Amino acid sequence: MNALLDTHVVIWWLEGSVRIGPRAAASLRQATQLWLSAASVWEVAIKYRLGRLPLSDSPERWVNTLFAEWGVRPLPISASHALAAGALPLHHSDPFDRMLIAQAQCEGLTLVTADPRLRAYDIRTVDATV
Image (cartoon, rainbow, N blue to C red):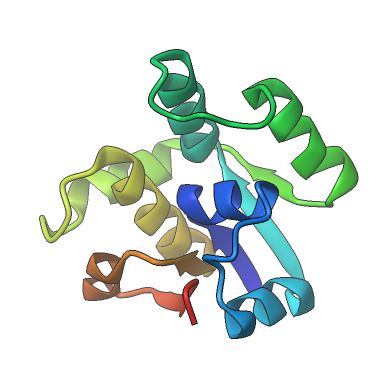
């Protein structure tokens, strides 16, 4: 499985949260490749700077740990991703989540998320809480 990590899943994983379920954790360990969207990095950086996201480390170190030590690959936002996000049905209004949905569709990735609203879209998902 090539998996795109939803922002909250990455935060839980890095922070060692028990909110990631055992089946989801096993899926993450067995994934062929894990991906982190630039949209998630952007979301974390914004919320961290606004004081709405307490982290045990800075977003810069957080990203370096994911890429350098954990082997997660960065997924840039392309023009085709942006167009796909703009064309999505309005089941969900969060722009960061809409970008993740579009990237999962365009790149054929499975989205690991705890957000049940994302299952309304035509993407493969793994429930992060199971």
